[in-house]
Length: 81
Image (cartoon, rainbow, N blue to C red; front, side, top):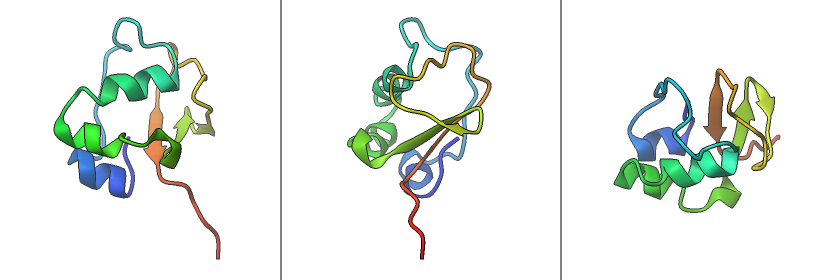
């Protein structure tokens, strides 16, 4: 799932994969792979430091394994006020 400006840049709110592509085992691997999906994906994931991720609704670091994940969400950092 993509939220906020990530959704705007990719042009979609979500997409479904049957399984992670070959060689994609972590959040960081997935981001690298997603950059190859389209010019919009490349723009959305151009600076991974600006993106937060949740795997199965829990915040996840780039090294988090995703091979058994059922939901992965990407969103910008959240600020309070």
